[in-house]
Length: 537
Image 1 (cartoon, helix red, strand yellow):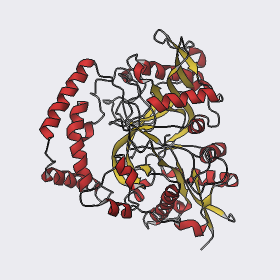
Image 2 (spheres, helix red, strand yellow):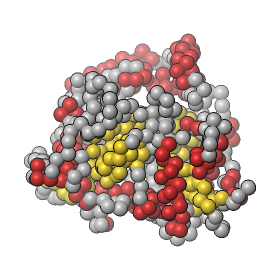
Image 3 (cartoon, helix red, strand yellow):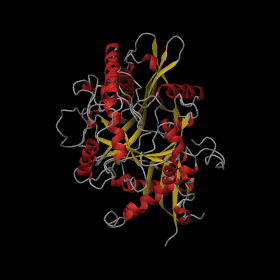
Image 4 (cartoon, helix red, strand yellow):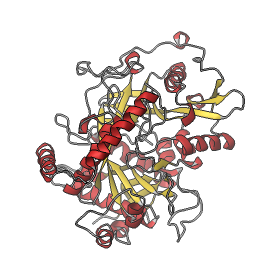
């Protein structure tokens, strides 16, 4: 057997239990990021109605459980639609149904498919934008919805802000401004529905995510209070070259839409989006990609979060997960215990180095041809994405990581990467941080062998790679390892004991029409996940 070298990288910072952020609090502003902001700020009357509804539901549900017949019916329906794909177990379905009885009334929604979905006619902002609308006919061919315009035809002046506010371009080379952005996001960005967890992007993470090669400083758009210059809102647009099916598209990745909680009645989200759009148009960029936990016009694909438990006692303690009825905590700990040594260590598994960048870039480019929506990366971009978050110094024997890290080489045959994004645990007596690793990009040259899918060769290899990623994450003291139903992830989620989360992530394209892409569901001849090859930070 030839000597191989597997390369991994712990890039730098991440978590999710599908947190549906309430960032913007606006009526129609979108959000971008791992879980986009929920864009509706209820009026005081609506809040009173919701409180009244919740009280009635809680009284109705007190002391009652979801009937077994209902659980059986859902299990039957899920198996019927998804066949041998990884499914929720009976206990997970029961828990989800229990939650939905309260959450549907809380949110004024109903049904599994209705969560986070506003009424079709309730998207005033998005109805004015060049995006596919819910009632549009399926796209017959890919392409822009609006033509590009010369720079002189683009609006030259910034959009007006409400009184007492002013625009500010965030200087990512200024440590003080990076700190301001970190503080804004840490206190106001993505939270879960129960306000138990909030993303905690580190300053190092933000520099990594927002400063790739060729980034545009003007596309880091902030809003400050005119009187004291306090940063109160932000949105970013990072340049990205996408391949959407057969089309090469120069776009921006829109992310980190965040507005200070106390200002979410000011309707800043739509004007932030329009100002970022204007800045991109001035630079000749007319397309964008963004994601969200909410449903707005119109997702090109939807993926589901899966979570691989690592630190069982802590996850149970902070209520990220629970001990099933038919299991004890001790048994659950044994179930999720991982080996102490990566399986591929003897085959040449080692950390990625600068000398590997060109080989990894070539492997990445070839492997990503398997998917329909992917980022095209230059060698410099591969260097940035996979190497700039390694931290400094040696790996600590205590933490399993380097400071500031949020063998002989033959051929590079495989690589995998994950990044760290912790979440603040809000108001917990013992824990203040949930350490989460997120699966980033990976590739294997096994994909290029004839009949690799039919013979199960790639499935086996990818499973080996991600199993080792989990071991490395566990050694680095992560509490949970997260992944989405994209790329080839469905080949290992069940076998590696990932549990299905209750969160969905919708993928959107701005000013670009295309048919739906395979994510949580197969589309035409494309299996689950194979339509999406973009991992959003």
